[in-house]
Amino acid sequence: GGKLTLYGYPDPDHNQGYRWRGRTVQHILTSGLDDYPRAPPHSGELHVDALSWIGTMATALGVISAFLGKKTDEAVFQRHKINIIRSLDSIHWSETQQGYCDTTVGESGQIEQICHKGYISLFPFTNGLVGPDHPHLEAILDLIRDPEKLWSPFGLRSLSLKDAYYGTGENYWRSPVWVNINYMVIDRLLDLAQQPGPHQRKARGIYIDLRQIIVDTVFNSWQETGFAWEQYNPDTGKGQRTQHFTGWTALVVKIMAMPDLRPEHDVMEYPHNERIGETGNWSPRLAVVVVVVCMVLAWYMFRRKLLLGPWRLVKVRYFVRDR
Image (cartoon, rainbow, N blue to C red):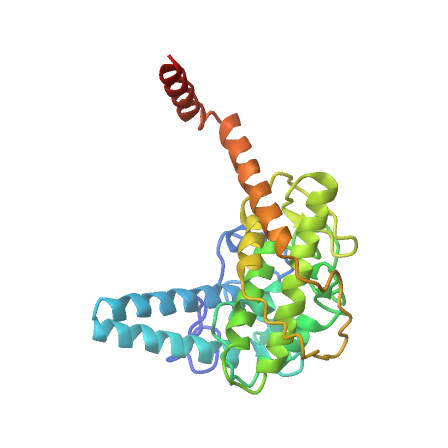
């Protein structure tokens, strides 16, 4: 946890704050976003993505407690969740930047917000801690849809195009499009698109566009190279880094299985709304990609000799039956 009282963070009795440990100046491997730009290491720093994941845990534990009929525990975890949302807004929200940011302690001991807009700015949103009536929801949706920041023709960039660190250093989480984070955004947009609220229409339109773009990116790259890739270039859409990456890139199949919310009679208009990719129904692609994913998984298991036993069994049964 973070040292809220020691460094004078507001309302330390109710707020919650967390930081990733075991970090260096260039990397926070424990966060999973290895080289994503952060403030210099400090024992008083607080990370918005760490707090968001604690919020997810509190939500899950509350649901489990309710299922088990543990009313007291459910109330405890609900209070934790409320305090986490309060902390996100009082500690990590920047009015000037209109986004969620990390915080740290400056040289003179004052609390400072360090804002590198990108994936970490979206974690309160993706993790379900920003509801349909939340006052910051519109700013988050605008950040997602802004082509000068996160939006690209091939998915959401990991870091804002305007950030000084964009595309620098190892450039692992400093520009590329990652399917796992895009999936989390699309999944949350679907929730908001189906809930009444002042920004339901905008969430629905972004969901429609981003879902189409991610599927096109993964499919077109597979069609060109025959591989599912670890990440995708935001300028060209080409797959890069690790190939045969059927881990979270396979989430594209779940994205394709999500409902198509495009009504034939309704064309939605948003700022910077230049649709990329095909606009027709790509249901045939669903079958193609499912088959490809299954073939890749089968090939991988065969190479690892995970299918040799069953394969030999099939051959034996076939031979005995014919005899």
